[in-house]
Image (cartoon, rainbow, N blue to C red; front, side):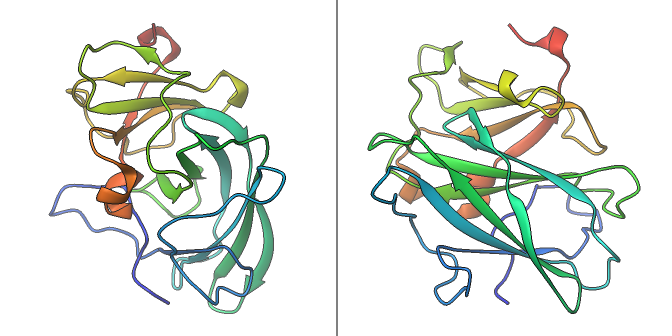
Length: 209
């Protein structure tokens, strides 16, 4: 398996659990980690992600999918392989030619054995730019979009345009709500997958506009 597609950034002296992620447009993973995912004839996205957590025990996680900062459903587990490898399928419908970035959040709950990276966002490029039409604007010249994820009420997930990342600690424990900040000042193709994975910050509903 190739190196991790993306992972949440943590301090350099932190031990990070060894979990690798591989994306593909095919369940056979014959062409892993494509630069861009094509929409089907019905403007839908279908993608597959392979999670390899060899040595960590049985993974317990939930997923949440957003497209350009809006809730778009959940991924579903479709196969489990020896060595603690799990395949999930991502389906998102009602996209369009201005759709830009889908993010698949793997949310590891308490007791799952994943402590320092409780949330990992796997980016799937669909278009050339993040479509910010549905995001609230908090900056005249935004450099990032903050996706405010609500794991309890996913439909309440929303996005904000911000000039800089929060001056706060990154998430280090399971949270019901968190913000995922993604850079948007350049076209999506200019960023590595690890950059589009963004950084995750703990938030509460009271912190939101």
